[in-house]
Every structure is written in C-alpha cells, then in structure tokens.
Amino acid sequence: MLNNSPSVLIFQENNEAIIPIILFPNDTLNVSIDIFGKLVFEGTNVNEWKIMKKLVSSQSFIEPYLFNINFKIWKDVQNNLDLIRENEMNLIKELRGKYALSEKYVSYLEKERNYQWMASLLIHRNKSFKGIPLPPQVTSMKNELMNDTLNYSSLFRIPALYSIIQAECSCYSNYTFPSPQEFTVLFDYICERYSGMLRSQLLLNLLYEQIVITQNYAANELFYEKFLNKFYQLCTDEDYVDFIRSSLKK
Image 1 (tube, rainbow, N blue to C red):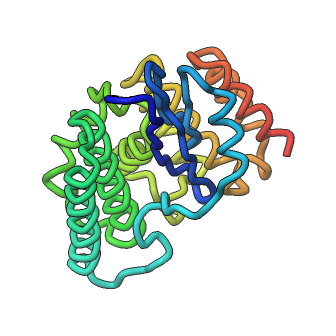
Image 2: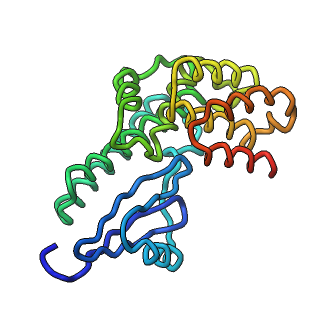
C-alpha cells in the first residue's frame, strides 16, 4: 500500500455471511477454506476480523448449480451449466480489471468456478443420466483436483472429486446418495486409492452423507461401526473426527 489508509477486502462465506477485512499497512493475511466451507483467517488484526464477521451478514450461493432441478434432456444440463460458468468467468475478468486482483487470487476464483461446474455436471449426470458416458473433461479435471495445492482446501474440490469417484464406482442409485452396499464399495475404493488429508476429506464427506443426510446410519448403526473405527484410525485431522462424533450425537 502506498499510504497509511486501510484497504478493505470482502469475503463471502456459506449462505449467511459476507466478511469485510480491514488491512492496514504492514498487515499480513492468509486465507483458506476448510472442508466445512468455513473461511480460515491467519495474520494480524484477527480480533477485528471476528468482530466484523459478527456484525455483517448476507447471502451467497455455494450449492451445486441448479441442484433442485430435474432435467429431462442432457444437453439442457450442459448448456445451462456452461452458460453459468461463462458468466462467472466474465465476472471474474471484470473484477480483475476493476480491482487489480492478483494472479494467484484470480487463479483461485477461476478454479473454484471450474470445480463447481464439474461437481454440478456430475451430480446431474449421476442423478438423472446414468447412461451418459463421463464427460471427456473428467480425466484432466481429476488429475487437477488431486494435484491442486493452491486450492487444496477449496469448497468445491472435494464435491467434484467425490462425484467423479461415485461415477467410477457406479455408486449413486439413491438419488446420488449411496445405499449402504454402495457405501461399502466407495469406502474401500477411497481407502485403497487415496491417502493423507485427501482420503480423510473424502471419507468425511462419505460418512456425513450416511449419518446426517440419509437415514442409512440410523437404520443400522452396528453396520457402520467398523467403518467409523477405521475412519478414526486413518483420519489425519482431529477436527474431522470430532465433527463426525458430534454428528452421531444429534
């Protein structure tokens, strides 16, 4: 910054909050997004950021695009999602020119929109068009999702990769939420082919569906006991373990 005036950065989080961050000269700021969609701020003036977060709230859209629409024609899915992504990319270009955004931040925004597009496309494909071959972009996108370090904790990286894994295993019979039998296939598949934090995040997503979104866990708790124990053993983040354990109590 060229003078002593503060700069204000605006962040959006989940469906409820916009967060203005005030940066003064010599302040530092590192921002990431955890698996639960929460912004994580590290740097100076943290207390001020927390206060501002409490004071200001608004709406933002983070769900897969057009999630509640049941399309009848696959081409309509592609055209609608492509148009949304194109409009989002044009908006990013406009913001970049208007606010002189850094290359790294622009790359982050563009990748998030691409990941959201892929997750949305595959969710619709897995839900209503199972006979359609996987889009040709899946292979290159999967490699990018697995090797992305800039967006390692992005909001849509895990949903996009998880949707690809569901398609690879043909495990999406129950409106994209796996049955207990499909859950077993997915759990073993993820354990065998993934490791570290990525495996922990994918298993977290899989278990959360079974425990919270569907009634599968409630209908047969004993069936899931060995999978939970294995998750606790393999998980690389205690916050994920605590999150699943707290979900079991609800």
